[in-house]
Amino acid sequence: MAIDHSQADVCGCTRPTVCVDRHRGLYLVTIGRVGIDRDDRVRTGEVSDRLDVAPSSVTEMFERLAAAGLLRYEKQAGVVLTNRGREIALELETRQCAVRTFFRRRTGFDMSLEVGYRIGYALPDEAIERLQVLVDEMSNPCSATPPTGIEQCPFTETGC
Image (cartoon, rainbow, N blue to C red):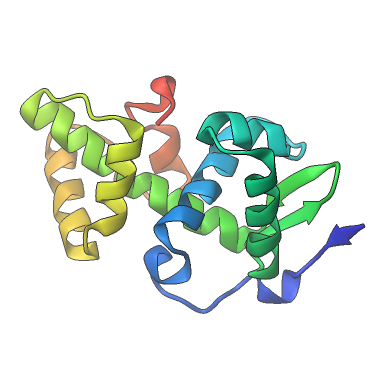
């Protein structure tokens, strides 16, 4: 039995960090990453393995995100992001990409996904915009409008 909250696809918020807390955003990013090159649903076990959390925790989060209209969840079949869930995931991943690219290119520090995500989530929009300008000056497409910005992130091959 599918849980469909399509009426909530557009939450009306203007920033992803207003729509979801950092923890929920990480689930959306992970679902988007796992399902990026395929049309089928992302299963609980795949997210559980990536985030190193119990499958029951993933199921609980799937239900919460479905209730918020950010994904469609069907027990035993998995999830697929709604349009709004995909937009939020792409924006959060773009933020992470800008942070990680800036640090790698300006300092030589190869920041982990988790740290890049946390910093990207916490920084205000103005700071992310400035980082994007700086990394664009270094010939990096991170600030391109999603989804192309994510697809061209220099960290994509390493699981950006």
